[in-house]
Image 1 (cartoon, rainbow, N blue to C red):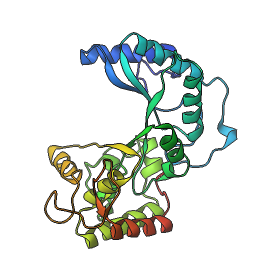
Image 2 (image 1 turned 90 degrees about the vertical axis):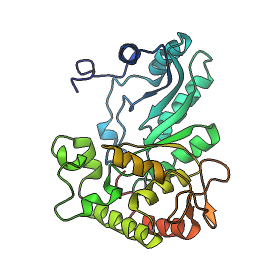
Image 3 (image 1 turned 45 degrees about the horizontal axis):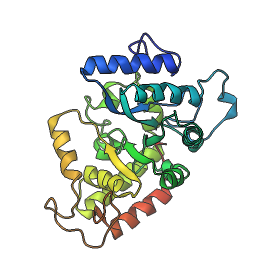
Amino acid sequence: MTWLRGGPHKVDAANIQQALDGTLRRLGTDYVDLYQIHWPDRYVPMFGDSEYDPVYAYDGAVPLEEQLEAMGRAVRAGKVRYVGLSNETPWGLCKALATASLDSSLPRVVSLQNAYSLTCRTFDSGLAEVCHLEGVGLMAYSPLAMGLLTGKYQAPGGGPPAARLNRYRGRYAEAESRYGPKPNVREAVAAYCALAAEAGLSPVQMALRFVLSRPLVSCAVIGATNPDQLAELLVAAEPGWGSGTGSAVSEGSGGRGEGAQWLPAEVLEAIDRIHMQHPNPTP
């Protein structure tokens, strides 16, 4: 990744400071509200892998302590208000929280940006408990599983040529290892799209509303290629049920805020049944 400061090899203190200073300069601002470490410097299973293999662990990874110290200096300098982690594991999140609890000069992690969608609910297995008990908010990225849950890739020929997984095929290893056309992925997406149609929702609406219905989700991190996609996402993000935006949900469940309702109980139950048949095909 030579476009990132010539291709940094580590997320160490020097790279954190250089990246932050560059961000502030390009944005023309004095500080950022939330600064997150994009992924662990050490080996962890991610981007399609779900099982830890000690064979791939390596020496020389940057300690979380060094990263937190660099973030702490940024907080004290007024360049950052809050810090978070991304693509982290239960061990990494607990380690960061415990380290900060022992040293008041280190910032406490307030957010975790991990993948969460109908096809990736691995957060619920271990990280959910940590976030709940420690008060860390989940920023759910890829709520549409990089567009798979729109249903567009189910079309004959694999979907529109300009769609991201087609446009960058062969040049996006992380995406293809997680969201590639594996049989279990296609079957799960087909089942969710069929359920959305049965419920009177678009696949986008059901996928995004499911994520927003989860009690530990602070926000969903969305992406759009064009204004039409953005408009659809914004409508889908409004709580309500039925053909009209904002209409009442009968017997709704969950929600980020008190009283927020997103999907009827029977739809959530059907989602769980599909999940049991096709658990986490895009971890």
